[in-house]
Image 1 (cartoon, rainbow over the protein chains, first blue to last red):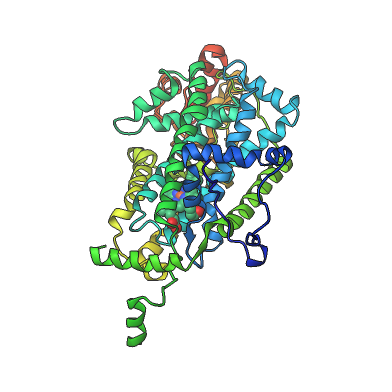
Image 2: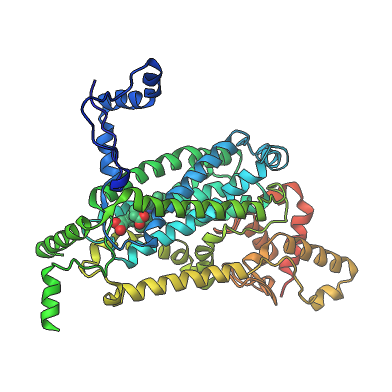
Length: 270
Length: 247
Ligand code: HEM
């Protein structure tokens, strides 16, 4: 059997296992000990067939430059808020009915009767604000740190697409409770859309699913909100993170490698 | 950036990265702490603020406030800042589209290899101004409550026509006030000045028939009141009567 190649975390020397001594038997002996190794064996079995441990090691043990600070956590925080939206969204979808006659009642049922319903609904509602705030903060960080410059231009472009998708996500989600506020705000929103040049009217027609705002509009918004956009966002997020791991996280702009020629020149001239 | 600059960047970055720490567990610990904080905030907001539900959507009613979620306020407020009707497409689509294009292409027109923000005066100014403008517009949107009361003096000719006209005028005033028109139009002292034109003297500019036509078939982004006309023609007529007597 192939030897299991789990990534090894950097452990302080005192905690490292002692070197093997001759004359001692290592490894599982009794069937019970073999059973205890089941998890490791299973991971080894999968790894032998997929070689995923290399990818895990590549992702987790890449180096991050010195001096990266708390601002660098904003990207992953955006990702966590998205995951929170995904999980709470799944629970809401278990009770929500995307029909213009029953949507409102189903949300009211979630709020009033489902166990922890209003709590999950509230997390989804406020989580959307959180995600929008975090995505803007993350964008601000990459802007002010010049992180969009060579070689990370493409990651910036993907980021802008993610920003647009996130805003579209909140726009389509806002209609779903189907109360007065969301209903009329969505009508105005779609109308504003319709004033756009060339594609504007077509986009509005597509969103409304016809010339009038009606029952089909709601199911269309629902499908976009819970299938199309989350799928697109998850895929692009994966690509975004792949590029972050591949290109490496930027060092803070003020950080200089002391051996760089530039710095030596600076020191000489000053 | 030319080739030399690129190579210099990659070289220096390689050195900085080599001296760095592994992502796991150092960065993961920070990210994890941040994730816990984010979840704590979301959970707290959900418990404290809940998920309130307004009255059920009704295409035929007249009480609504067309307000978007707060993070769209800056877009909505652009409509109010830019008034002339000819320029409205500029506000609805022009500025956001240009902003989006500028955002997309940023790495392609900003080719300055410098990364320290204090040495990028144009980027610094543009960034700070953008944040300031969006913050200001969001603040405007948040503080402009959709007024649901209209208090205009009764025109002399209506008062002179007797109590029946006066009652119709008052009824129309209530319908208009409850219909959220004030969210986008100004009526004397009440209502928001824009995105729509002021209606204080609309009766002088448009005859009743034209007003009714606009209500059924408005220019975007105004919603149509066809639903009201079909379900409650009396209220619709009162609305038109009130508006056409504003002179
Ligand atoms: C769903 C939204 C997004 C997620 C989940 C996300 C996630 C991440 C993560 C985890 C990183 C690693 C470094 C860090 O956290 O700062 C990163 C880096 C980056 N992101 Fe995003 N991001 C999102 C949206 C955006 C947006 C809107 C932009 C810009 C328009 C953007 C541009 C970048 C750039 C340029 C980097 C490289 C930064 C560096 O290496 O220092 N991202 N992103």
